[in-house]
Length: 321
Figure 1 (cartoon, rainbow, N blue to C red):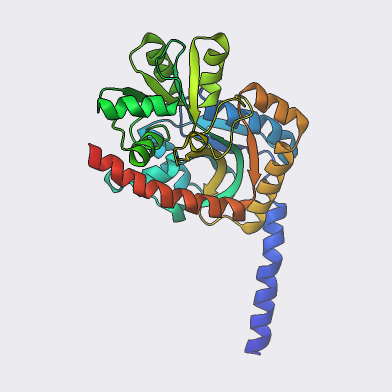
Figure 2 (figure 1 turned 180 degrees about the vertical axis):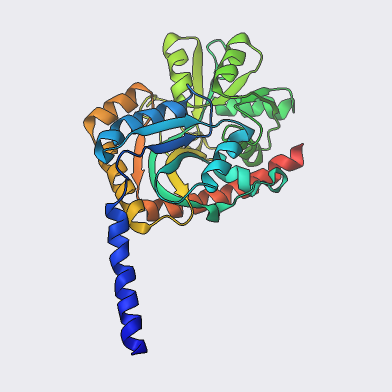
């Protein structure tokens, strides 16, 4: 009798899984994507574009809400405390998210296990930008100056321990150069500072830098990606310039821990279908962004690699303070 009851119970549980998946999303209930940055930046714009394309596929409103602050920690905390029903998601900027829980001094109320990987959809990296009349023709010129006069070459980033700061730390480690880091609260003030001559070089993304390169006010002297960017195909990576540094930057959609596997699969497959569309690719290219889809398993492995790399760089950055 007990065996028969156990069998019936297992059968009932198995029947619940597809039922839960088929009920997602709940009719008339919005799916929210938390963006842990201010409105108007690269992360925000890319999330709103994705939401626009996801909405007709899911059949419910898909809204983006901005929860900026504490270098993404405010928005990530909100996600970690959300119900794992698929209706609350977030844009994860890697390595920014990883840095908040890998840096013990931040005392984040979550860790890697607090989140569910769903889909990676943007792949890119920062570049090194200088003014058009800068004396630095390439990264080696920059490094030579920073070695000859340590802590005098002013390197601007989008924030302390940000995905702009840590690539600079990696560049120091690889070359023995020493920069004077100047941290700003985001890409816009960093661009303004470089144009004003308040910094000598900026580590910044393509979306906010390429327009100034096209206008002739800035030049790019190096790219932190594993391969060249299609938006500046003539721009050599750091490795191509003889410096063994790679610091990719990615956007992914994640959820809180404990999500149903079938709901995760539905969301991930839908995002993959959207990313593959020509219309989405055209809109993404207009933002100077490049896509790369990864399913949950691939994103999990990619994320783990980020954690390993960033933990070491955070230690080095803290030692400099």
